[in-house]
Length: 140
Image (cartoon, rainbow, N blue to C red; front, top):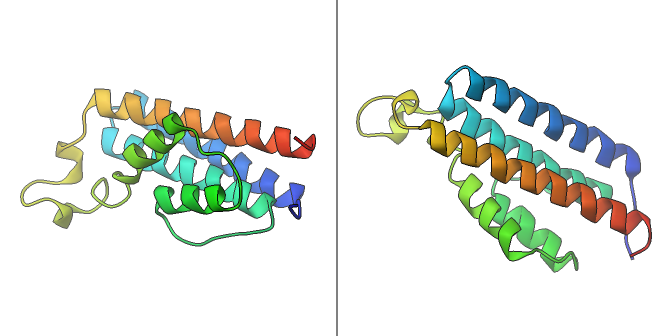
């Protein structure tokens, strides 16, 4: 059914995990916009890990589109994962660019609660991707 590439999956998922670790350090330092952005990046890398692992790498940064690609390949996308992808997708641009806001800078607009939630969503996505991968390797 799938062409499995364990080496590429491992590279991408390792990067996803390390990016999530970096997001947590930003959270601890009060850099909430960067926490949110890196949570997005962690989820993106996790989704791409699965796509690479299944022999279908995809470019792009929309977590929704990456999730839809997996769904179209026959990977079940649970509602809570879709919710996590939708919420994290909103952190790709405005967390980084001052011109995304009419006044101020991104650092002014992100809260501790949003950052904590972003980490939780990213953890959920990384855990889900890892579970899907293990299941696929077992032939289920």
